[in-house]
Length: 444
Image 1 (cartoon, rainbow, N blue to C red):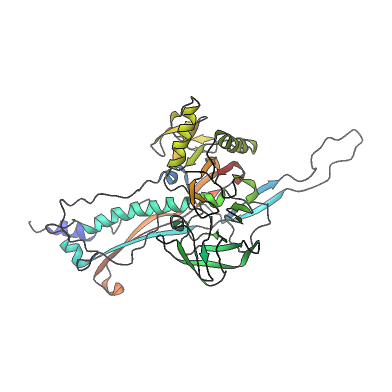
Image 2 (cartoon, one colour):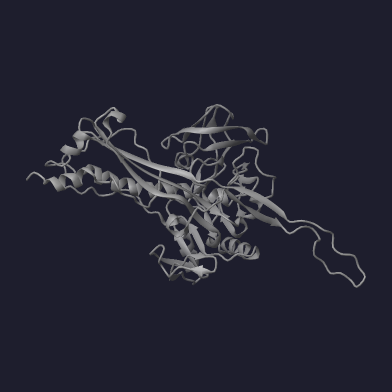
């Protein structure tokens, strides 16, 4: 192989220096790619291209409009008209009693999601030789971008509350498949089944998550036991759709949760004020079959509250259940291109997602593999939830678009390594929870 020209060498050395990508996710590697360990990149291959064997779909993230953050740290929501402020008045009758609207204050701050990668100088060189994987930095940069947006999608679809099968003052255990819903830095509260009460005075911060065993390590505080409910009251990452479509005292198996989206304090809001708005259908931790009555009720509740459903989000299991349900009734899913509505405006068909989707009653259906699942009272994982959403009131507010930073300062790293970083500052916002709904405790 001929030596590269000076211009080629400079282009190679400055790769990524001025790059900026628009994506999102959190993934942190604890070691760099090297050639002297089991994680080395100088290994025998049949060609340099590395094929993905991972699910990198991010359908829900793609379906939600992105907007500029704007000059705000929150907003207010009117949740009550006031009592008897409007009524008929006879010719000589008295005027209605003066009352005021109930206004809830919502706090919302941007969250930072980051992804890092790195490679040793030696691996960068040897990966280009015969049998190597090629440009390892370009390869990892590409993979990190996929990981970044995948993490964002997983955070937007993270579950909020789960029964614990064991616990202590420093840890609790949930079904292994559910552990991914807890992220490092999340603030967790507890519902004590034995005392039938909540511990919201000594919240615990997640410091480690084992997705193989389901063990979640927390800072010393709340003491968890078998059968308690662990629920997230403040996210380190993006607020999830499951946080938003919740309610005070939401049923979780034999207990309950008080997930409080956008609440930055442990004390929480007045019970029944803000989170009481969403329509949520539970079944006390007992699995049940998805039915058209459940789906129609969720749609009905949104319309009764003044909204119009724009999207049905579910897992692949519920997608097939719905298809079989409609086929058995000689009804069929229609085919439409997805349009995202923002206020009174709509995108061109398929512009935002580029997907062709099934519909129910004219409402587009998106199956997403990351859709959260429910758990039974026996700690068994049930099927995925179904969410019916009015996306006019949902948005991903971006404070800082995803930035790419590459560092070759060997002295700062105290090692001959090249490091890369992707980070995004954003948050999902819902300006009207009353026009969103969820169906939980479904069979797969």
